[in-house]
Length: 484
Image (cartoon, rainbow, N blue to C red):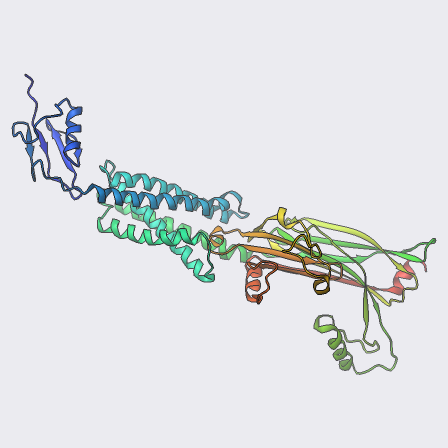
């Protein structure tokens, strides 16, 4: 008959796990008598052996009935910890991947990569949680879980701070608000249990955590504040009349018009809206002349502050639109150094009676380093008189006849997207001179009180602005250049 060595069962640890030693070598750990029988069965012991036999077993710190492990509690904590880490892993990937794969600037891509990497760390922490609340075969598993909980606490805390800036409901709020509460509980539990104990170099681990936090904070600050503010925006716009020529068969002169645009700044842009308008001026002249301030006040009363003029020998003037149209495609981008020109020819009767002809070229744009416009949706025009599109329909008696361009825009820092409602860029254009653009969370057909403060804030946040070029020429000069 073979002689089996004694089986020594050590006292339960803080989790109720008892180490099993056979013949002086550790054979495993057991939570219960069933676990103990499995360990012994792998070593060749009989499954029905008597656990209370003093000839075979040596019990320390209790007998065969001392199993303090609360399996349901331990498994509940392990499941909750793992679920929280896995959920946060997916959420970090959702935040970081759009910036990591498609952000315009290097700093924003680095920020996205950091969030993706933090998601990978959270995935490893979820695996470590299974070991830490299991048999703890890896000494660093507790520290790994603590690192994951700290990442979740920092990330969701930052998201909550950003959310307080606008306090808008989004579906992501249902993710990071519960996750923040979960992280507070997880950090408290792990610190209370001193989960970092047993790690070979805890100081180096702590230094790595601090260094990663500082790098992430600096990258976020640079990509969201300094870099967008430091890159300048400059445009070169020109609208010029060319040499006119007469038509011998018709009583008209043909006037060429050259429109030019170049992005001379440091950031590519989306052209949101554009308009060129050629107008002819008719004025009555008076040799006696009134007081200059009187002329200016009358002009201000009839034309407003922007178009008010003060000319001593000219009575209040009238303008007529001669030609108006689009210059660029709505939503198309203009990269750094890219230029675009357009030539048009319009006709004027020789005896039209204008004294001055003027042209105005206007564009509105949005910086690409601050937002990404859904160009496919935005570039499709909606006619305001089309009753089959109720979202954009407006009776001509109220709105005239105009085209509406509208599409969603995403901020290039995805942290802002997950803490705010969707924003939409809207541009309105008509040949009569209607030229407007806005960025807002409100629907186009919103009938309540407009939130102009929000529009101004969003225009500034996305770097939206306007640029304009004007030129004018006397009708006498045009006719002379045509030989009339």
